[in-house]
Length: 170
Image 1 (tube, helix red, strand yellow):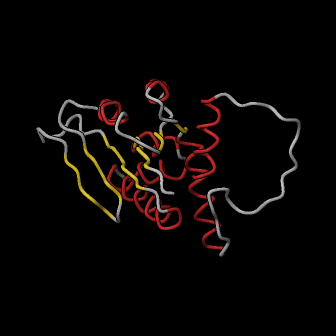
Image 2: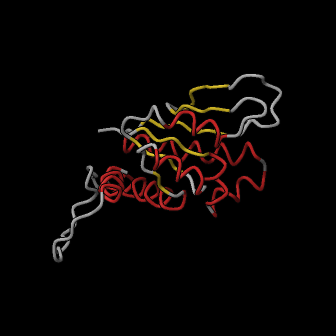
């Protein structure tokens, strides 16, 4: 089943050592590098992805939304941050997650019942999925088949169960 991912674009770029190198060459280069990786990830996993970029100083009075490589790209309107846009939209997410390392947004999403994942964790899962695809290893919701020994039973909290279920699907 595909998830809906709301991604804080600049946060992910700036938390990633490799993507931030592209951004050092220019904002557009950083965005292009991120969108290329997300497109490769989307091909492998099939998740619906919305990437939100700040349009704080933009001359546009309204948010600008477009589709690029089957990824929804949003530039917020003048005077609005990506954080505000994500907070407004997070309540509409049925099954999915918010990708950001911003603790305020993570807390807001969790209160709305939507799991969040840090930018670093998501980048690792994204790169892992792309790598397995290149190697021809199939992934399912559980990931690659690996035998894991189970320890003593322990009941997870609802929050941990949601996060664990999301983690498997990424």
